[in-house]
Image (cartoon, rainbow, N blue to C red):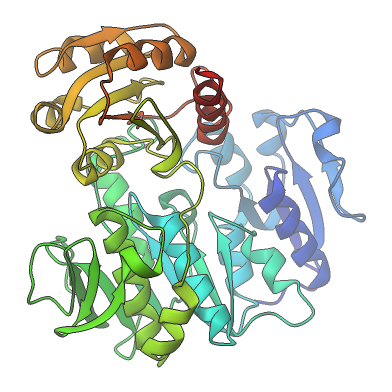
Length: 436
């Protein structure tokens, strides 16, 4: 891609938008930035970028550019992007822009759940092997910021959301990790099939010499790359775990209980995917074991907050969809009092009910979806609907006997009451620490 003398229009001025603008400037482009927000949102935009606050669709339809770089938080198929696309030569995202100027190895990671933990694990192993391995993309640093470094790393651990994959063209991960797929983001996609199709774009530019790491049983189309499978069910898979020990072709590679702070089958899947990906790059078992020694999961992912009166309080605020909620429930070994709820994303929670009856003592629902969720969960366990997370914590405590776990695993996004899952998880942590 040659940008010298080209006009690159950046749509959305968050961190990824600013990184894309800086990279386009470095490559000799004329850069403009557009956003619905006011002038204050542009304060950190690089010098030399033409800024256009309070940008409307009417303005967008008059913008002519060679490349329109759309931030992943903006609906690619919405009317706002459509207006700016009318006179754009090509519509891409920040990840695609960065990929055009990166010469190293890309480990691309996608899936409905587990992406961030796996991205961290891969990055940690790559760094320990002396390959850099910066975590970037949908988690960590914007990819364009990595490319802007004076000495970019030899490899990156690139988390890719469906939103980012919508706008790729040439992005080529030499290794792809496909963790899982379940319905999500039905407030953005018209059908589950459309969401699945966006995810599948991660494979578009792979060739025969590349590698795909995939959970056994995932229904994927024929892929040209070499497939390596992991499983917590099929012991004959290339990689297998019972949730405690990781085995590769029958040989033990890692003891999760002894070597890491990761627990549960869902985390075993993340570890296997990371080990398999890095093994495909020729990194030894000894280096990988050293890299993961003492590793603790990121916040908000089945994070143990405290134990009070014999009750564990786990923060799984990152569970913003049904599959994540089901994974968290399935991985618990103690009786659960579930706290769930938040924004109504149009998901069908009926699949959770049998698992709830198997794993939970009670449930507390809160937020926008509290009442309909309570009606459904009430078919399996005693359930109470409340307004706020503070109310939910207090109510859950009253339900939870010694030896049980209060699990915040909302199963939906937080935007009805919080700015994001992080704020929701931090609020839960604060509320739990206030209990006495």
